[in-house]
Length: 545
Image 1 (tube, one colour):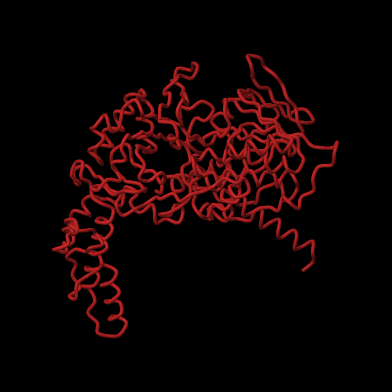
Image 2 (cartoon, rainbow, N blue to C red):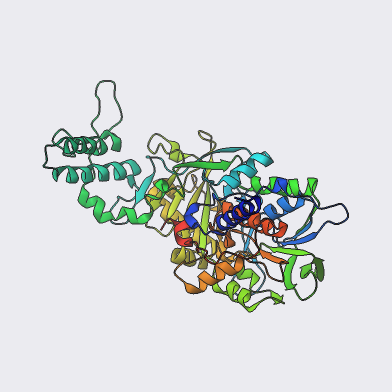
């Protein structure tokens, strides 16, 4: 094989891997371009780039282009960098749109104790998100384990689990396995070696007795605490009828065993925004990158030789020009801008996909009751059919005096309904859901109302949602996704972010998209997408459905 043919195939494979041809379940583990080998811009001949939006995708593009000598200017409408990577700390002010078309309104001023924080956006990093982990290593961002599941976590189903005394994860998991193993074992009638091995496997798998029956297991926990004079019996098993009637598997109970998540992942020490702070500091101190905050883009014009961007800053409308433009603006916001010189196919693509509604609620608890002798929970997620949907326990600062809890993370209809409530009503709804899991939520001194914060991402200015709600069965989405992978204006305007990646809703997707666009600008891969690209299934990738 000739060198030119080999190079072409490598570029083609890289292009396909980064554009999602392998499907969204590739989880972003496609090839990463070797930007270190790319030539730096010659002194005096540096190309200029306007990057619209300082989210993770925009910051990553600035990082890669900046260290290759490109002159980058980031225009960010908010007074901070990070986009949806937002960690709430004491003194932070949260704003949302009230739906009336006016200015954003203040919803919360975070009053957590100094040192406490809560990730309102991304909160975990799977081990196969190699780009995020690699950038954390390069930037010196220390990581620690994030625990997504412990056997002490709980499941609540209204009408099935007792109020304030939901089922433990270990009971649901192991009693279900025991009952199913017993049913399967009862069907085995053969006496051959294989059937004997299978019968033995089922005994171990379900912790069955010698007769192949299930009567409970210490895997599900003890009915009483250990005592020096008596070894307690296993907790009474939940019946198969109880388990099946509860429909527990419909409430994301098995999400932690999905490859996309895992029971143990990573998080930055001190909050997810440590990634944002490290990226921002690196690009402004070591590279030729300017970050201009409170600069709201209102128009993009491709009719000239370069790109002209009009933005509002300090009460004035200003115009900046550059050789290239990289847009990290969320699609629902981008379609509100005045776009001149863009193809109709591009404008159709921007209109085609909406962003998914999603809400989060955070609480400060003055006592880490979830770690007490009764609960014994150290990290992980509890699940419920209450509108809060899920309840996260912190994976850090164990055995300390106080802590923060994610008291809701929901989607679709539940998120829309919660987002329509006033902030105080959201907190009351979330408190009700928390009390279904832990009666301590009835104690206002333990979980003070004034120490709660909420965010409805579909109402946050300049965001308008959690992630691009791609549906692979929608023909309009199929053409739109492919269109967004190709630049406009003869290679001058590009879209980045998790919205244009196989991983909507994940930082890995934003970084993957940024690397893809930088590789296109550098000419390492073609600027045209493959004939066939696979549209990501956003609901599956973000909600585990």
